[in-house]
Length: 188
Image (cartoon, rainbow, N blue to C red; front, side, top):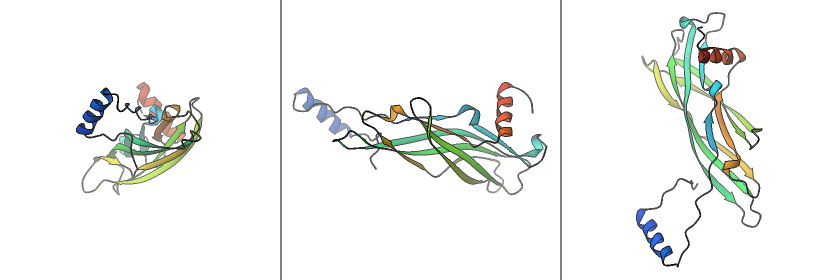
């Protein structure tokens, strides 16, 4: 897979610049852009509590925060029609903290990746899950899931700029409310 972020060696770049200055070659257009990746604010963190009504510090199984979503893209376009496919490979990373109620040292995290169009309509949403293990006496770690691969069709004239990719935790209504209270400064 050829990524748009590939770099040419300096010697080739200098030779191309010198030859284009002589009029033998024209500079190629920059590669089309990848879609913008964003972590969704209200769904960027998760505090998972044990089942039941308790919501104090001793009831926390784990806390997680999405810290990075990076990726690269590749275009496969048909010159005759101007249509094709945009493929995206991305990695989602999170910081995790084991809570006092977590006895087995494991955390099952659920997150989603959604693709929207220019009008912010959701074109595709996929759910992902991963099990994070706090080995030994570790209480904090940074975890990156397996790569996520997306591919979607492009109409003539479309580029990655016509799409946006959002990442967030798959929250229950109670977890979403908890996040919003935390953001507004309301105590648990």
